[in-house]
Length: 102
Image (cartoon, rainbow, N blue to C red; front, side):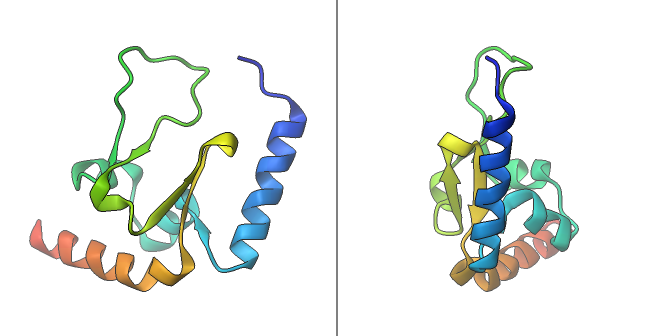
């Protein structure tokens, strides 16, 4: 699979547009919260059902049913966004989950 420069330009434009509307790209959200993607896997909010790994895969994260209220996948752009309206609830959920693991 070969991704063109246009793919990445369109992807970045989508991130800028969605973030201007208040949504946050998942990696940006996690960075702000001091979390890693691995923690979302451990909490069962994301999964990866691939049977073989490929360096061509950008979009490997699948949102599980418990993660769907908070996150919105955009598979054509290989991105996941946290919906602006759900950010406070997601932060609260993650804080409670983090506290429960201590």
